[in-house]
Every structure is written in structure tokens, then in C-alpha cells.
Amino acid sequence: MLNVDQVNKQLHILDSGDDAAQRQALHTLRNIEAQNWSTAPNALVNSLVEALQQQILSGPRPPVVHKEIAALISNVGTRSKSAIPQLIQFLQDGTPDSIREAAATVLGKFGSDAKSAVESLIAISSVPSSLGVHAVRALRDIGCADHRVRTALIQLWNAPIQSQNNQIQLAIALCKLKIDAVGLVPFLTNRLLASQDEALRKSAAEGLSWCNKNDLDVVPALVTSTLNDKNEDVRQIAKNALDHLKLSNEKAIDLCAKQLKDSLHAEAALRKTGQPAVPALILALGGGDATVRVKAARILACFGELGANAVPALMTALRDKDWEIRLEAAKGLWNITKKTDDVVPVLIQLLDDKRATDIEDGEARRRILQTVIESLWRIGPPASAAVPALLKMTKDKNRLVSQSAREAVKKIQPSAIK
Image (tube, rainbow, N blue to C red; front, side, top):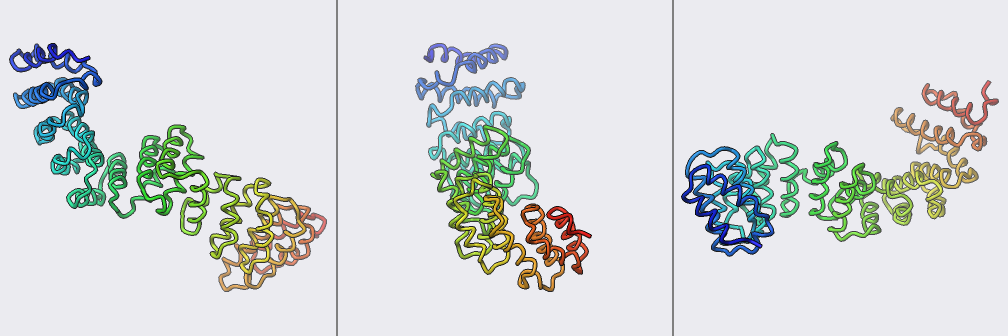
């Protein structure tokens, strides 16, 4: 419970005491816990803020005094909306940055009630220090996305030199305020999945939670982070982001599958998901886009026996007109069933498939043939039916193809090599 008489006594000292007494009064007020200020009358809070302004205006003060004032402003927090004009004055040039940062933070906590602070916050948002970060956060929390804010934040986003922390906080603000900016989502997904800094990954996950769930790579990146980040806190924030986007595991998986064609991260997300992704991948395998079907078959192959429910769909894909889909389906069936009856004939056929290998691009032809040969090599002795076709490949005009075929025969049926 706040002792009003004690606060008034300290305010009187701030008004009339000597420097030492004023510092002690600030320290005493600073030690009043934030929850106790919640019972303070508005008039008392206003008197306190005015007294703090006088402390700043009365002349140079040691840094420790500025820290005490900043901490006191933070503790008082949003107790009185009537203090907003005074808090805005704390943002002006000449006020120590620690105090300006504290004032910006408190103004942000007022939300839309602090719209009158927007102009002052914009003015300091471009400062290349933590003060600028505090201003951007306050603009984000106030929630005003009018023309002034949009113009200022986009200009700041396009500025050539920014620290990683400044840029990530700006990205969160842009996402929360629904302001489109070039490269925003790729920036966040890259930081979430590639940064070595845990704090940056946490912030990136928070930023993505404010994006449109249908935007390319938003959900795949969050799913990947939820399942794969080495830090438990980052994984939890990514999970919270999916919850904020109102996505169950099933819906998140479906969105990843729908983005397989163009997403940089959907394939990795579905691989990490494992067996729960099988139904969505079966649907993707039966779709109309060849790129998606190839990726779906490739992902199912990595599940091994956990992909058993996809066997009928993969069997159908063995007859596809697209050679790459047939190849991935064959590899998937072998990994899942370890049966060669349907797999090896398809791979043999691919070694002589004119559409797959009779192409002008010699390097593309080499890659195709070596991929098929490697698939047979991985099967090993159970692929003995492919030895005649592989022996033929040992005489191929491309040295790398012939060498790969020779190694495959050695693995499958060593006695066939003379």
C-alpha cells in the first residue's frame, strides 16, 4: 500500500532540499515498488512527474540521478493518463537518453491513449541507438499506423545501416502495425532459422506471430523452429506464434504442404514434422503441380516405415509421366517397404528413358543418370535385376556416369565386374 504522506514528504524535499537530500529523496521514491504506485491518486502522480521535470531542468545531474529518475518513471508506469503530456516532454532533446527511453516505454504502455506522443516518438525513432529502439517499440504498442507512422517506419526500414537489434524491433513493429515493407518476412524467417543469437530468434518468432498466416514461409519457418530450434524458449515462442495465428498442428501442416512449390522452408518443416505430415503429403502427391509432387514424394521417402500409409499413392506415382516423380516415388517405396518388385524395374527403365536422359544439356543428363544409379547402389544386392542395365552404363560416354555405374555393380553384384 502506498504511503501518500511519505511520498508527499519526499516531493517536498525534491522541491526545496539540497542536492544530497534530493538524491536521497529520489532513491527513496525509486524503491517504492511498481504495484504500490497503482493506488496513487492522479494528483499525486502528476505532482511527482512535475517534480521530476524540475530535476531535469534545474541543471546538469550525475548519471546516477538520471538512472533513478528513469527507474522511477518506469515504476509509476501507466497509473495516470493525465501525466501523458509531461511524459511527452521527457522525449525532447536535451533530456538524458535513459529518461527518454523510460518515458517512451511508459507511453507505449498507454496504448492508443498516447497517440498524442506519436509525433515526438517519430522524431527519435531514427536515432541509431537503444533510444530509437524504445521509440519504435512505443509506436508499435500505441498501435497508430497512420500516414506519418507508415512513412517514417518504411523510410527507417529502407535505411542502409542499422544494427541487428534495431532492425528486428522495427520488423516486429511493421508486422504488428500491418505495414507492408519489402523483404520483411524473408528477413524474419532468415533470423529465426539461421541466426546464432537466441534473442534475435525469439524476436523473429514474435514478429512472425503478427504476420498473415498465408504469407509465404511464415508458417513453415515457425513450424521448423517449433520442432528444431536448440533453445527451448525459442521453440515455445514459435509455438505461441502459431497459437496466436490460430493454427492447430494439422492446419499448420496443411499450410506448409500448400506452400511446397514456392516456399524456401516448407519442405524442411514437413520433414521435421514426420508422420503427422503424411496425410497432407499424400494429397500433395496427387495434386497437379509436378514440383510439388516431386517434393512430396521426396519427403515421404525420408520417413521410412512411418510413411506406410503413403504406399498406395507412391505406387500410383510410379506410373507418372514425369520421370522425376517416378524416381522419387521409387526411392520412397524402397525406403518405406524395402521391397524391390515394383521399385527396381522403374529405376531400370529410367536408365534408358529418352525423356529423362536424351537431352542436349550434358550436365543435366549426367545428374539424372547418376541419381538413378545411386538409388540402385543404395538398394544393393536386392537390385541385382538392374546389373545388365548398369553394365551397359559402364560404357557411357560420360566418365562420371560410367564410373558411378561401375561402383554400383561392385556393390550389387561384384562378380559381374571383369
